[in-house]
Every structure is written in C-alpha cells, then in structure tokens.
Length: 285
Image (tube, rainbow, N blue to C red; front, side, top):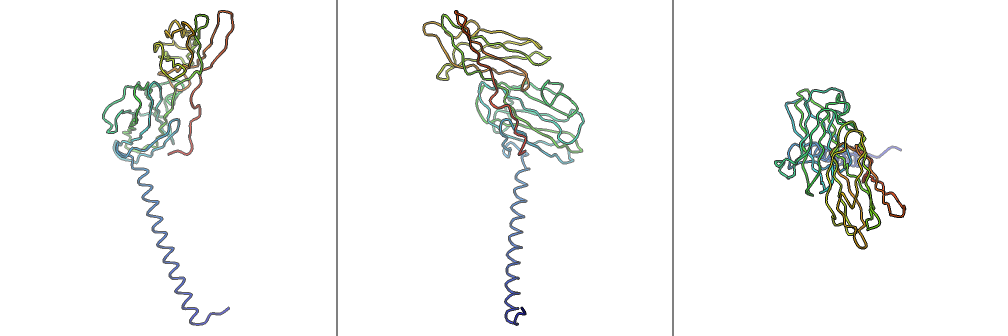
C-alpha cells in the first residue's frame, strides 16, 4: 500500500534510528567479544594465569615469535599425586622445544619439587615422543594454588595442549585387629620402576600408622601389610578406615587392591580406584 509523503518521512526516520541502534549494538558486541578474546588469550604472566580444572585439557596457540611463556593456575592437595603433560595438538615433530615448570607460589618463583620427563613415560603423551611432549609428575606435600608455566622456543609457532590429571588411587576400607589384617597388592603396569607411597586414614580422616614409600619394579607386584608394614594399630578393637596410594608414574601406571583377611579365613576386597578416570577434553579452555 503506497505511503503518504509524511508517512514515508516517518518510516525513513524510524529505519534510520533502528539502523543506528543496530550498528551501535554491533560495535558494542564486537568490543565485548574482542576484549574477551584478548583477556582469554593473554595468560602471559603469573598474575594473568588462566585457571585449569583437574582432569581437563587446555590449549594454547603460540604465534611465530621468539621464545614465549604461558601460565595457568590450579589447586593441588597435600598427600595427592598429579601428572602435568604438554604436547603438540596440530602436528607431529620433536625438537625438544617445549618445557613445563610448576611453581608453588602466586609469583611463579618457588619451584615445586617434581620429576620431569622429556623422554618416554609409558602411558603419558610422552609415549610416543614424536609430539614434542613433556610431562611432570608430582607428589604434593602442601595444599595450595600452584602456577604452571608452559614454554616453547619454536620461532615458527606452536599449538600446544596442557593437561592436568590426578593419579592418586583410593581404597575405601581396611580393618585390623588381633585377628584381622588388610593387605595391599600393588602391580606396576609399566616397563619402568615406579615409586609408591601408601597412607592410611582412620574413620575420622586422621592419618594413622606410618606413610610407607617403596619401589615397585617394572611389571612386578608387591605385597604389603597394613598392620605390619604400615604400623596401623591392631590391638583391642582394632582400627578401620581407608588407604590412599600416590606414585610418580603416569595415570594408570599402578593397579592395586586391598584384601582384608581374618584368622578364620573370612576375606573381602576393597579395590583402589581413581577419583576421576575421565579427562575433560571438551570444552577446551
């Protein structure tokens, strides 16, 4: 239906106002998206470290520049073991140019004690070594927020993944009395020795007995007693609780089980399991 001259002028004015509103909204949205992108990518110092969840993966694209660092932060807990790994996400190649470092302070200056692998570590991204991997494993002694620094010296640029996994194993039950003992059976699933530490906690969550550290040879099985080796008291009414197992291997390096055995032959099992066996690969931060 044709518009009158007055209606046409009003329609043009209305369209003009709406267009300006849309354009302004678009500019605002572009600024918000752009700012969010810059903030998301700009984890270049300990102060701007990006959070990473346990048992998840984060990705970082390093541009074609000189050596560059990126930082993440994660909360780790005492008497737990973790694996921190990095590897290339878009191409193969191994130039030894990637390094991972872990720090126990917010400033990124206090190096946390850990074991570093750039060569093969069975069960980790270091196996195979053709994806420029590096892995650190750590047995944490102090709960806190830790900083992770990922560095590449590849001037052509790299697209890297960073993964943090908890490797601690948990058994929910032991029971020791004059007539009962609980036995831990620990198997090394890899072709290299692995150091293991067992800790017992009573029904209130208090550490009891003695933390027991020992080496499990490659592909071997080791047998320990809660009462004799871990010195958990079994007098009177005895003790009961759970057991944690930390180690310096990759996730899945150790399998373990607790068997409680009585003098009459009665027995029951409490297998060790991980807190979370799934890696959250999506969304990737």
